[in-house]
Length: 232
Image 1 (cartoon, rainbow, N blue to C red):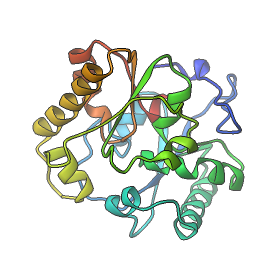
Image 2: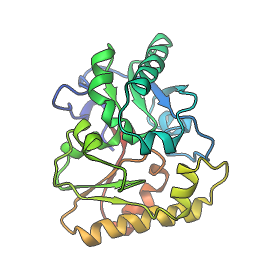
Image 3: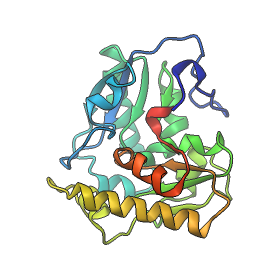
Image 4: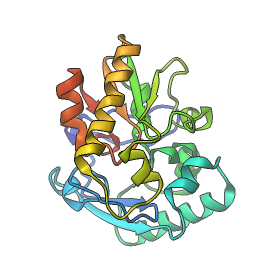
């Protein structure tokens, strides 16, 4: 992972993290979820404290994963995410991020509405890395709107997890329990499929903020580094 002073400045008017600007309080716009969040997941406070950062969480009630992933950008949702971000800023947040990589579709609009840097999604790594490949919870639903929001190059390979597997079922279905070992297998299998079908991939970008708990397993099996939104 990059140290904070080594963070790239993201292009095209997206979040501009100034190299000498110390950041300690990160505001996280959270979807309305109940599934388990092991360490590494954006919703686990230790995922941030291990990097010297303090998360401040704001849940958007009714924003369930299946709604956000399966719907295109809509003004009604945007206004609710802006409201949540403003609440987080009022609580001292110095940068805003989100718990769903699909919110990259709102990157420009959120940044325009807020006075602090916005990093909506790990997808923002897509334009910063050499030969990236994207691992997502749903390759069927990750569309051009989401990729354009993060300025991801159009030729970037995308691979989703098994839509019938444990990881997809529990996250999209917002289940209170999940077999974490099987979830790890599902994510690793998708990563292996990504590099098998696209051997040119040199960096794996994790769209889904629930995948980082398995990043070490992904890297061990693929030999490639993984990047997620917390790394930004």
